[in-house]
Length: 162
Image (cartoon, rainbow, N blue to C red):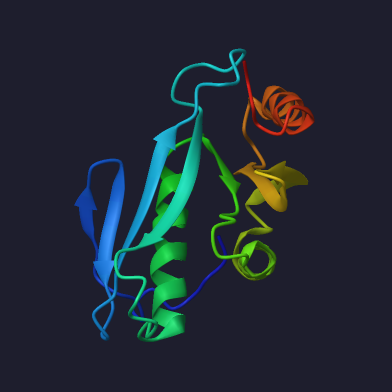
């Protein structure tokens, strides 16, 4: 990932499957990766879902948005530097802000990830709502064609695998 100010971020702790950090305003975020086994042509440990959750949905102050962004991007950069893995993300629909999330991820990708990563994306229907799915992987990933084919198959069935 291209350079961004690594010093201007929150400290984070290791938790099961990921990391947590707390903003200056008291919001705790969880950034985690869970192995996604639904593409059976891939070796175990190749594809993970990527999730960001905020502990307190009532506290809408996020602290420094730049520090939140930098912390999440630092975690993602570390993930891709350490492993030849891919992440899959489907934007949450619970609050109707899936389009906002997609624009944010697009901006982060364009600003910080486009030189190292490739992205495949598609709209999907979840519980009757249009949302967005994205697959990110390193440009040098040896499983690139399997990842892309598997992603296309999942999109074709709206990520519902019987």
